[in-house]
Image (cartoon, rainbow, N blue to C red; front, side):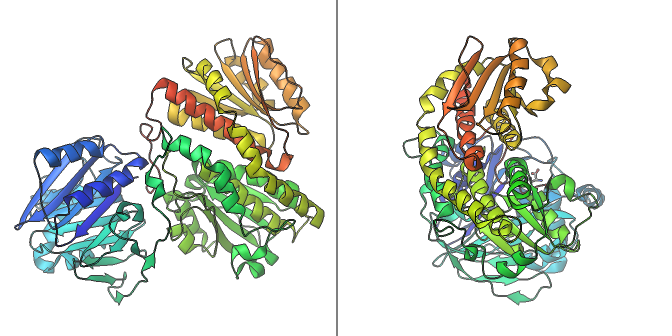
Length: 608
Ligand code: HGA
């Protein structure tokens, strides 16, 4: 979502700010802006659209400053426009903000009564005016920010500068992530360390409620109570390869093809030839796992689909009752927690606002413990959960999740097995499941090699307005994920249905203009699925079947069969995801959409 970058240095920071924004831009933004202080003057530049537009403005009309803040916006309050772009200023103060100030209307009214004029429609502008109104009485930017945040309901990560303190950058976080980048005689802030990898590899992760005062020479951090605290400095050793597309045309395609390696990474050191190694969940896991009698999974979007699949695995293989819910619904309802239930959250970024809120809300609900399946070490979900299992997919840049999803499925299988062997799962079943996992990377490679065949079928979708995805059992959530991918990047309306439900409604939509995609491994539901697909054929629907080579589907005028190598059924959902990702990708490329940054969407959804 929105990105924040800030710098306090002894050199011109404009380039650092713009480069930082570019590194965050993959998450999908609508506008960008920056503010720097030079010779006691505040200079702002804003542009609608991509960061390149802001960069052009900064080249055409150069800006210089040794202290500055910058922002890429994904609008929540007020349309994407130059006026609504951040930073928002109030006389000597400028502010960038990620999150939502929920009580902005009351604050706005109060500030209006005090004579402040608002030029934007954003919730953020109340922050700049409130800080201005408090500054004189507070005597410092730090104190003004402390007083201001006491008035906010909602979520924020904030970066603030003032010409009255031209060497200082103050920042604070609550509900949205923020890090301080530690440099040599220069320091930085950002909503994601990725933004600052060109200037430092040392980071301080601010905790909830922290406020920091950052200058080129110094970093002071204060916890919510106002007491100074020391937070550890972490060194990021991971290479910076994520910011490079390499030989690929889009990050999404690169990430799809990385899956063979990524899934191998996710397994490495966590499984022997025949068993899951308990140690991979951390030392506290043993005692917790021994007590688990049920699992509640919370997630959003693609991660929710991973959770839906894991539910089949928990109940089928492990005999452990499992419920799955989207976090944005769960967090606002009363739920009944069975004794000894493990709370499992799934999120690529570890900052998904609704999932994080569900975790925080769960603390008083009587869960046994919390575990997160996550791709970003040091993220809020990882830090706030009792246990974590990292997916090791590496940074995912494409907004539409691919490698993060399949690595979540692998991580979830490890969890199901680790818990299952304490419940109904036999050693033989564990050994079978682990043997299948070992085959997975090789099979992924074979499936990805079929890419050119998928390019051919994708042409059949480009002119369509709608598509239907069908699956049964554990393959139904795979169909949902396939439909979501197509929607996200090609903007074709796509719906997924459990194939058995077809006749209860969606069959009415099927005609020769409706492509119907089916996920058909050779499992115990294959014959049932075939009957459902007959119903589609009988109505003239165009079928595209992704099937096990032994499933016995035949190509004909209305049916295109795409054979996948025969694979153990336990890993089939993971394998069948790959052609659906490729299908969505190629349809989007043919349609000419912005594949890595689809319209209206953003990566790492840090607002509610
Ligand atoms: N509410 C602010 C910031 C939005 C945001 O954090 N998006 O991710 C705005 O609408 O400008």
